[in-house]
Each structure stands twice: as C-alpha cells, then as structure tokens.
Length: 222
Image (cartoon, rainbow, N blue to C red; front, side, top):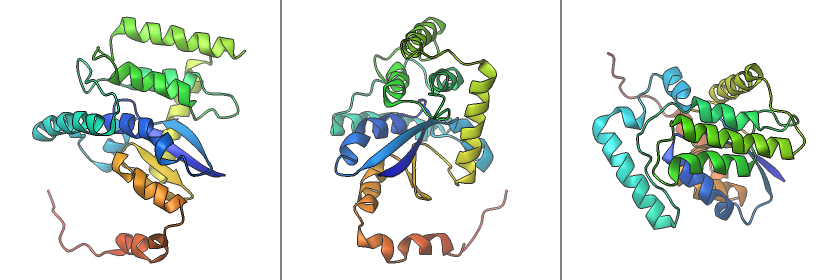
C-alpha cells in the first residue's frame, strides 16, 4: 500500500474539486490517503506570492473556471456568499477531530464536512452560527468515537507542524498530493498522480528531474 499525503485548505475550490475526484482517480491503486490541513495563506506568504483571489482579473476567472470544472466533472460546487475568508477556524476544527495516532490528519468524513461547509449551499463560510453548528457536529463525532476534544494549543501546534512540513516538502499551493517525495499539485494533476502510481514509463525518462535543472533565462527584479 502506498501512502499519499493530501495537503488542503477548505478555502480552495481546486482542493474541493480534487478531494471529490480523488477516489475515482485512485480506484485502481492500493493507497492510504492522509488528509492534512494547511494554511494556504501561509504557503503564499512564505513564497512571496499573491493568491488567485488577490488579483482582480484572476479572481473573476478562478470563480468562472471552478464552476465550469464542477459542471464538467459532475462535482457540486456552489460559490460561498463571500470569498476569500479566514479559514483558520475550519482548519483548527478539522484538526481537533484528529485521532491521537494521527494528530496531523483529518478523516475523509471530517474533511468532507469542512469542504461542504464552504462549497455546498452558497452560505457564508465565516458565519459564527454556521461555524458553531459545525463545531457541535464535529464534537459529537469525536464524543461518539470515545475521545475527548483536544486543547486549543495542541490543535494550533498541529496546524503549525503541517505548515512547516509543507514548506520543507517545497509546497507552494493546495491541493498538493505528496507520494514518496514527489509533489503533485492541483486538481489537474490527478491523472498524472494516477499514472505515476500505475508505473508509467514517462517517470523513468528523466523529464521530472530535468524540469528542476532547467536554467533561468532572465529574472525580474523589483
């Protein structure tokens, strides 16, 4: 069985699409997926990048494209009432449900709750009442599993650890699927990931390595 780390932030519509499409993409492979919440904004800051929603024309295009992708792939995607928003409460709620044996990951069921909170129904993802209802549902889930709700500091530490691990791996965005040191980024990388798992000969031809060795022809300064 092959382990895959799926780094995500529920703020990302592409992460939502990838999460929904992942079972079909991996159905012919023996894998264990570990869903790891990470603050997308933290990755952007570390690399000096703006997010898609911070560039006005790109923002418009992103919302058009993700709606089309949802339509084309049969994946429900309703734009929330406002976007972007602060995803920290969702990330921390997710990690509060983590099993003690896997404190950096959320179950697929919990991950689905986070994505559906944002991308189903068109409501305000940051609405305090909705967040409180989600927290109550997740607390019930943890209680039914016979576990206690963890301390806030432990949850925050787990989220920081995921962010640090993501940067060590060279992650710059979400969704990012990491398998045996290889990073596959984005919803559109799912076929590439499946091909690697299937042993596609392309990965043995050196193209992966040559991409990282390509010289920079010119660099913008300022």
